[in-house]
Length: 116
Image 1 (cartoon, rainbow, N blue to C red):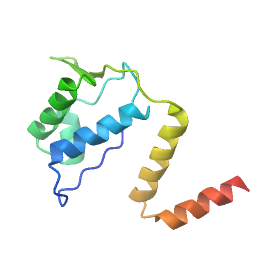
Image 2 (cartoon, rainbow, N blue to C red; image 1 turned 30 degrees about the vertical axis):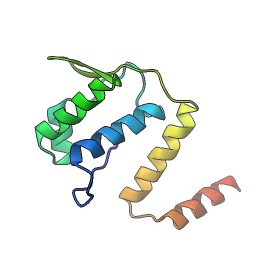
Image 3 (tube, helix red, strand yellow; image 1 turned 90 degrees about the vertical axis):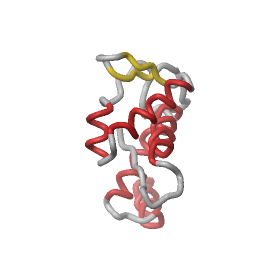
């Protein structure tokens, strides 16, 4: 699961995190029944406070997107996403390009070249 948060944005970090997870569920990058990382592991990987992750998880629980099971973690509770393989691949491609400093125009050129 590749989620990004930006402390420079005006949106609170927990909302950014919840939005990223929600988008991943909706487009199928995270599937129904899939277990999410533990709050502690996700906090460490994103360099966030544990309570920030817990707040995002509780927000998603209240929206009925995930279920929280004490001692067992968080699990996706909804079946969403159409064309999940393609949508997930596109988002993963864009995320990977951003992580590697590849701009939008360069990425589009690479995709066009792959079609030839």
